[in-house]
Length: 428
Image 1 (cartoon, rainbow, N blue to C red):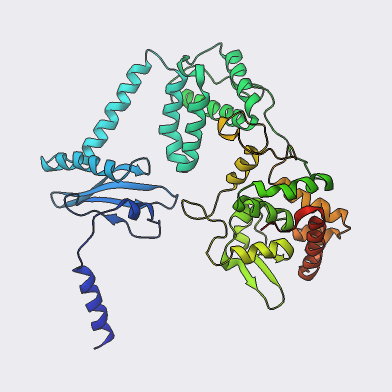
Image 2 (cartoon, one colour):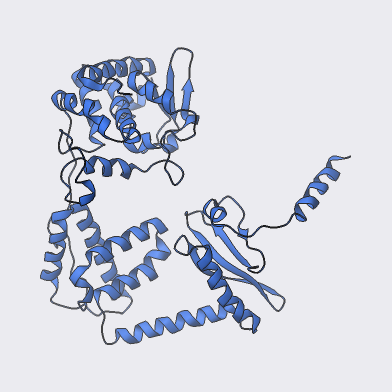
């Protein structure tokens, strides 16, 4: 049997294999590199495709006369499989009575737009302004995840402004509103102010309000956090390191690797087996340059002491720090857990948590702590900067191309011994 005959045989067998109905699991696992998935009767024509941006779209493919057409009917996961099939049935009914679903959808959108415009002739509130900004602007220009986060922040913090009519004389009201948000979180207040300003400018530019946006950098007060300079001292590490068993094992291991290697905590969250190099006498992690925050070169990280113990324990399952929903855990997980044990939250969820004896620190402070303690131990400047994957600046960086790999291993060993002496020994 020739190779061409074998190929034809395989293709023929695949062609005659019974197709399976779409399942929620199949939709969830669909990646953008893969072909779109199609449902089977009684939902023939319903399809889902994954976009490069990370979103997934439901659409209905059908024929009108001799033309093959399709219409988008929703996005996943905001619309699940059952809801998509409900929408599909509505569009199919139109098709069955010879009405083009795509034309019908466009007419419905135009009718909705005219309805909103008509109601806005009487009242144009902040809530309506934000809704229009999200639908017309953000959903077309930002990633779905970012759009959802902005929508969450604005809906949560709009508060009494929601029913206020957009117009003149609101500077003081807006200033006080944003200032109150900043007492809880300057970061949230800064995002709220930025997006409220963008929404107002969009409304002004598109003619929904004749009042120019009055929001500037003084409204709400100074909202920049400034660069954190927090570094943990020997005394603080002597309290923190033995106490870290109170965190979950995953978070504890990420924080330990951040401190013992000088990596960014987000880079530690993404560590995986194919970055691990197991040598005869020494192990290392090689992080590709495109995975680094500053992608000027691959980053070789020697593994010694506690970092090596964690690598041996975690290897063998793809990502070292897996998420329950697939992939690796997000950096945000670390901050949430550290905050939950800080004693600063009034949430009932965190009331029973053991309070960390070291106050006012974040996961990224451990990277600064590693670099500071290297300097304190008399580590040469160039080696310390190479450990943190900082690019040497100016002429020094141009002429000095040595990677200091062996020296980095020696100084990371010295650093690990120092942290172990402060209470960082294994608690497995």
